[in-house]
Length: 272
Image (cartoon, rainbow, N blue to C red; front, side, top):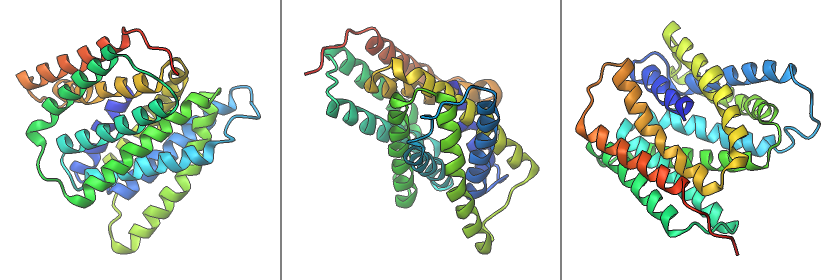
């Protein structure tokens, strides 16, 4: 979750500071992740089955990365966070119920408590969003939910993510090339650095760790734990960007982390 929070900060710094355009940031991010994971995968024993389902995961990864970057160029951080994680929750929890998971009352209470914390955190930034930006962020959240769900079926987290990043980089390059004639492509040295750090470390290695953890989590708990990302990102902004600690941030963090803890310690009801 720390890696996910870092991605938000890096993307906002690059786009908000005018250091890169969304298409270039997306392409560089996915290329960086593909190279880093590809090199790491070469140092490990090859598993023939790894990456067989990477095309579906790659499509979800590209939709998430592109939608995430494009949306944040049109809507604010608070509104974006609320839309993104609402879509993640809806996607993953719907899949959990479809698969037969039966969360108990305590888990539902934890989810509602954490969602309340997210609303508290995002509320000052909530306004009527740009319709196009809102749709892009909802698509990004749903795509990330599908990408996370596919991780439950993968035995080799590094090889699977390496294959997904390599395949997702191709349409990202097409997107950047399509934006070039419109003079919408620009990357400074700072933007290049931010995108590559996001791709190699926060995305590539971070997603491999996430895939390694997913088999030990139910779909609902995997969705719920991701609600910790906005408070983590806000706390990082306090430490690294000099933003002030507000009572709203403290309350939201307590609600989100308390809800996660409540749901994580609850006993799961048997399916069926």
